[in-house]
Image 1: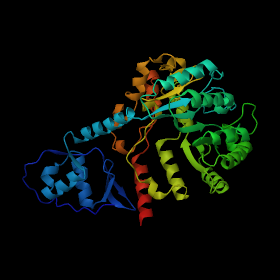
Image 2: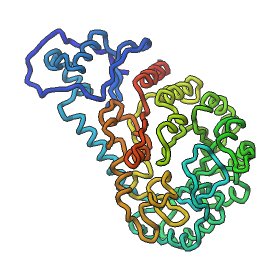
Image 3: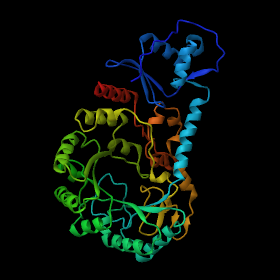
Image 4: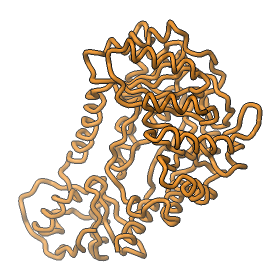
Length: 456
């Protein structure tokens, strides 16, 4: 926390100075625990202030008072250095710099990213799944060969390629995965630099674990959505039988047989399971303590282009509810309180990477795995390359936070990831309203309070 500011604003002065304005990234607030304070999201600065300074800042922010006529030159210099007051176009230039850095990142990858769906078939019937009524065939041999050819086109441009096995449920097509690994090792001219898999974990067995241990799977995501009763409501088999016990046992096995693979146990938090998560987290953490297993959560998202706002609101937590949940985790010791303090956003999604693609079993290419299997949303094919630049530009230029007028005026833009691009694509394509805010002011204040409590 910064020093307390007592400004000498009783002294008027005459000083030739560029006109200064209140930065849009300032957040003034009062907290019973901290008193009056000022947070600046571009600088990540937190400073306590006295009541008179708070009142003056409110007047300057609201245009009632002019900074140059109420502050000393020394105070104004200090506040300018802290980005509390900025020159007329300085905030806009800051946004342009952030946008440039993200765009530069989008075109500077040294690896080719491939999200590979060997099948879109799945043995589960999860109610929040965004993949519905998709073809269930596996990737045939001729498409596998085209995938090899596609990767080899980039052999002279990249240092390697990454794999993320996705679906459907990729292990439904384990034979296809084995075939592709054989072709990659024999025919692809780029090395595999990292490999991961998103799986429901139900089909894991000794053969599969030993195969991936031999072929270096670096990361495997498995979802457990609550205690047995809750999990079986959302992660249910198509035959309606329980999946909970078998997944738990399979994780036990995988942790032993794949010691070099980090297993991420993810819980999708929605309205039905948020209260029980602390107990679940403790149970799973105790079970796999000291193992190569990480327990974490994400939030249920209904970002399909085939949804509506009412349905979205029925399953997703609001911004306030997400902030409340993070505070619940901190109070239960699941998150460190100091981790709640805002950080500058460095989030980067597959859809924003010019050198990352999703490929379906028929050889169609996509920018987002939320579009996979919807052929009219494809950006090309393995055979023809990229042909649909409208959708490419939609994801890479038109749907991040820097294209969102609400985000551009938000004081939290530097510390917010802007949410999934597919929400804005849904607005562009079908007019579906969305709310992807990471913070509200009340949540931010509570985060800062807990952080300061932990720093005492």
